Length: 263
Picture (spheres, rainbow, N blue to C red):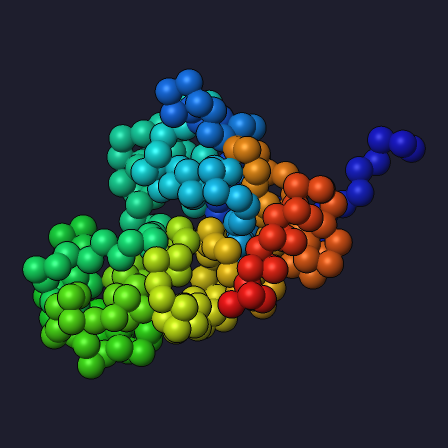
């Protein structure tokens, strides 16, 4: 009777992960930036990816919407295999919102126009409809009164909240954040993190590359630690912070928590 498999937990049974990363390797020239990455993300899961500079964190999440291509392995997003390329990439990008370190807003467009551009051009919405959705999400990130201003008239924190609203206007199933607070002044970090926390509370599937450990503790279902292009450790936040298994993780946490206390 040794060959009887334990039956999986009901929640895990038969539910395809919304993101499946299998055996992914990536090189920039001769430098291998990702090595044998395997990761499943369930719908509604919130994952924080952390690690030292150059560990491959940003590259990993950029691969999920094909801003970077992988040389080996496969990435399946919402049932769509990215390695097939072509039209699949466009389909995935419609499902995945991305917020970068730099806000990437168009300076010559108003906040409202920045938010309606993609829904009008990619989803074919009429202008009034796109504007109504944009106002809904600008209200959601608590800056509806900025709709008719230009990016240069807003603070960094406000611009980053616009970038989040803009991504939400495409009604994505997944949001990727690549160090969204690292270019901000310290007093603006909280307003952006608060916006991200409220998204998490709505059940959005989120992958966040961030050094904000308070955010990781309070929001993440899992924390993933990367070093030298590999996933070194992954655990729920409680376990990750109180009992890191690897010395590399312990060193990183020691450095980062000390520097955050110093501020």
